[in-house]
Length: 145
Image (cartoon, rainbow, N blue to C red; front, side, top):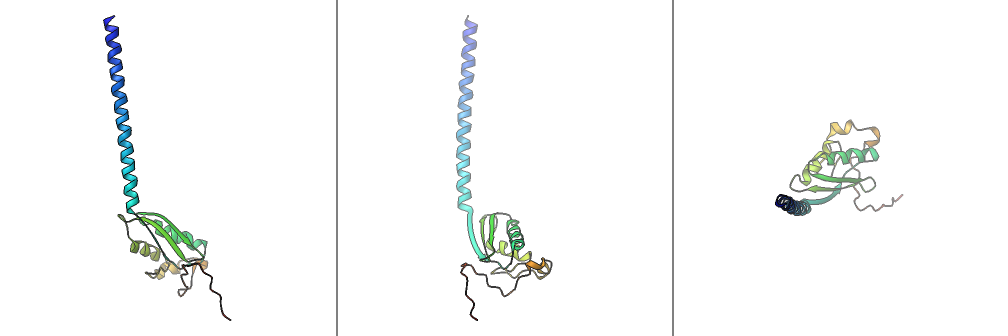
């Protein structure tokens, strides 16, 4: 009978230790996740700038170029406004790297002219006017005749 009681006591003690360890791991995981989220929030930056282009194919190429930069989380180019909004990790990249990546794909940005060889390889519908306004406000300007 003593062996049975002793066995039950040992098993109960092991169970309590196991529960304590699991609770400790859960707390550590939660603290790590919160710390990680805070770090991401601190490093995140958002920028907007003009990019010349014409159509949905331009949108795909421009966004793909921006997203190819390490640290870019999201890029969205507005066809009508000729403007891109980019979210990125400042510890991994900077604004000029994003401008340069887009320009390398053949598109002019506010700060960097598009690569001419890449521009020449764009589909016909994507060959934009190099003097095109990058209308960031989205206002439609009336033409005077």
